[in-house]
Image (cartoon, rainbow, N blue to C red; front, side):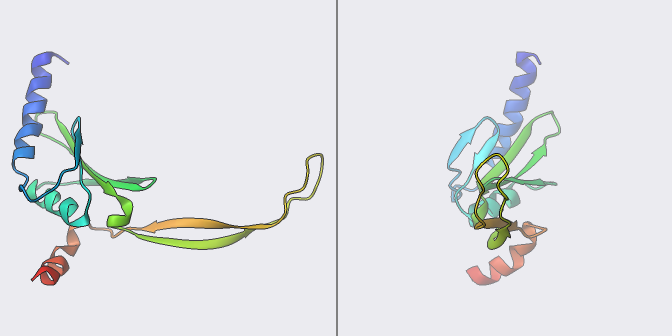
Length: 132
């Protein structure tokens, strides 16, 4: 990629950042990532930058991203607990019989599952009603 092509991509991203409302605390910005702190800011940033967003999650974060027409890329990231319900269950891990190594006793371990809404923007009406 040439410097000129990179400048075009960055300019395209910068134009989108300028469309974000001042009320959104974007936290940190790294490359083409907007890191917000709240569900409200996450949804507001998505709404301020209309278009089709792809949803991803990993570890303790969830993010949406999209590719821009001129080759740019932008994503919005938030802590997963802001938009998903954390469900902790337990399961029994069976005892391991002793063979050559010492046996491991039976134990109970946490199993963490995240249940995220299929559509993050689908909550707009409910949120607007609650804000009124």
